[in-house]
Length: 487
Image 1 (cartoon, rainbow, N blue to C red):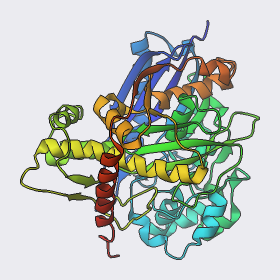
Image 2: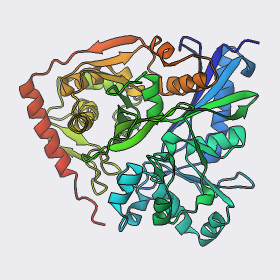
Image 3: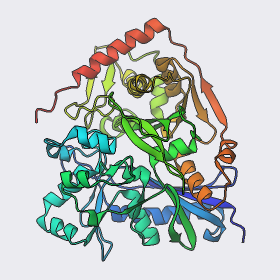
């Protein structure tokens, strides 16, 4: 039987999806299920990994059913995932020993004191922050002395969500270089776990998965090769076919993430960016990237919906925001879990400034979209200074790019064109591309480039004077968010 399709499993922060792609990169089937977000304490965010695994099995079956195909029609499965989210499970039973600690979680702030930030950045490319996996592992081991003993005895397994899925799909304890590069434990140059970092955090090597290329056979599920794994943002870079040094994309989801391909050598950052692995094809050198990570963008829209009740569905924010010409001087800084790039301020908390009696819920909706655009601006500014390359255009993808208004605001704020592809599900597409390459479904990167098509382009229309005025107001609001957490 001919293998005419590739399926991508996307295990995200709020939901799990499976999308089936044909040989042209077109979508032929999709299924999605949300999972619960658990907030046991302020600053804590947890997921039930067992619920996630059940959802993944369901969406795989659902996507195949909606595509009208069987697993035998697939050439491969690819995996992409929320990064940094951390899980420990029993090596013998495969059962989690604690809830998964999500990347947004800030409970590990106290563990960061005293860590050698310079050594960590030099070896891993990462700043010392609650965002990454290593402090979460350390917190879990500290929470129960028995877990520390079991970890040292090799009775536990650690993984980010790709590793959890690979283990359940194939029985193999493995991760890829992109996800490993987000743990704060992998050496960026050797692409192996770093003994100095392991010793610094007190994490036993025995619990760690093997590190493999992103495009690589990991095992089989239902007789089909599982042939790729990439962190979600690296997968989106790959799906946008940013295969050349200097190409960049921004994905707008729960948070937003801008990645710039920097070539075959890691580029250190001194302006609050993250140096990370972009991807690695089997038997080839890795590609690296600079990344600007923004914690809260789409999550701010969810906050308007779920916490304030200003809208009843996420898309309503666009109609409401479009009903006013601007935000009326209102600025929202959504530092719900501190600020990520380029500030890295865990002490920051969200603020709404510029309130007057004139402000309505429509202005708050507009300020929500503007907050996304200005956070991306801050990252682009740092990235341009770091790389000495001025952004010419910005390729965009992710759920929020359904908002034409947001993308016009983004073009205005950046002062450069913003381009949306025909297929905006680039995270899944990147995982599918990498899996297809590993099994020969697609021959090479050039063939993948041929599939990329522009859907729409937004040109900037804001004057420099207006942009400078709004930038000054944004920066003042950001400064107001600092120093809210005393300890």
